[in-house]
Amino acid sequence: MATITFQGNALHTSGKLPAVGGKAPDFKLVDSKLQEVSLASYAGKKKVLNIVPSLDTPVCAASARKFNEKAAGLENAVVLMISVDLPFAQSHFCTAEGLKAVIPLSTFRSSFAEDYGVKITDSILAGLTARAVVIIDENDNVVYTELVGEVTEEPDYDSALAVLSV
Image (spheres, rainbow, N blue to C red):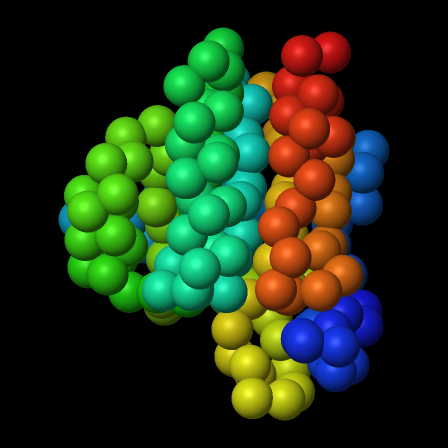
């Protein structure tokens, strides 16, 4: 369990992010066509997991736009934008925002939030995912993690993406 804050008030997650240097846990997430995708769906690629509570918030929307902008220049990498939003809402958001360089995936029908330790377990945000970034290399090793300490703040994009250029 990790402690983060929402507007300065403490709340907790279901666990801890996967350890840097370890193998990434497999996952099953739902894409915009209601199909399940897994870690193996992106085999051989670097994977940026941009995990957000809901795309229907200003900070999550800003994070999606920023990663979309940065993702356009990434080589052999995909940016997976993961939230609890339904795939229909994610697709609508991406279309409305013109986001084409990120792949929206939903935790709908999934244990991803628990498996990655990002499920918020208390407060009015219980059930949502905490804001986090996990980067997985082409061999499915975790090479970077960031659990954002305050839900209303954006992640450290520069530190996260610097890992991809190594």
